[in-house]
Image 1 (spheres, one colour):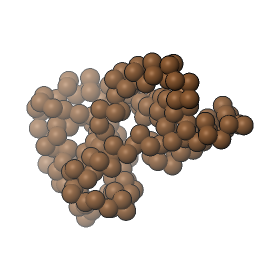
Image 2 (cartoon, rainbow, N blue to C red; image 1 turned 180 degrees about the vertical axis):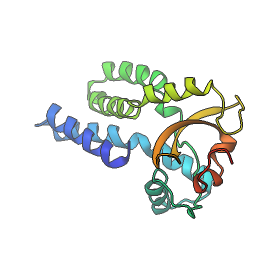
Image 3 (spheres, helix red, strand yellow; image 1 turned 90 degrees about the horizontal axis):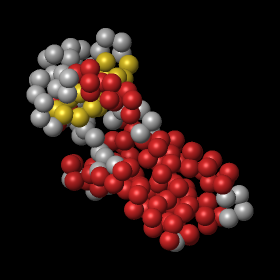
Image 4 (spheres, helix red, strand yellow; image 1 turned 135 degrees about the vertical axis):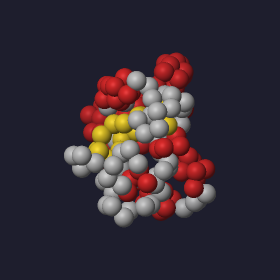
Amino acid sequence: MNLREHLLWSTLLAVSLYPRRPFAAASLIAGGVLIDLDHLVLYVSRTGDWSISGALHYNRYRNLFPNRHDNRPRYGSLRSWLHQPLLVLPPLWILAYRRAWLQPLVIGITLHLVLDHLPLPFIWAAYWRSGGRCIRCGTANHVNVYRRPCPSSRTMCWIVLCRRCADKRLWYTEDSIYI
């Protein structure tokens, strides 16, 4: 999901849960959106570009279907350990249980992670279909499931790639997936 969708769903939930508590509503919205600051940190570490406008520009084009001569870099997944619900949510909910004022923030973070993990069945299906191997080079080392263009249907699809193949610009600019 993108920033706009997270903001929309967080705002809808905040308004419905806390119609007369503006601080709690703002806290829920902040939790639903600001967890994505880890994407900015990973973008800076991979590109060396410290500008927020550069990161927002990259975020706009990274999931678009590229034209044939589009050779802008794609940096793979920008998710850190903060997007692992089993690592993040249990300690946060324990903390929110002890500190009631943190509950709206934790609800926002939970909503964000739920929205991010909605496509999980499609991701696992792509992984099992590939046998846990990169569909481009065949290696089983450090593979990940990415959402990339499918040349046959000109749509986006879930595919399994190793990190080396995922970072290649050629993957986005050619029509054949076996280049």
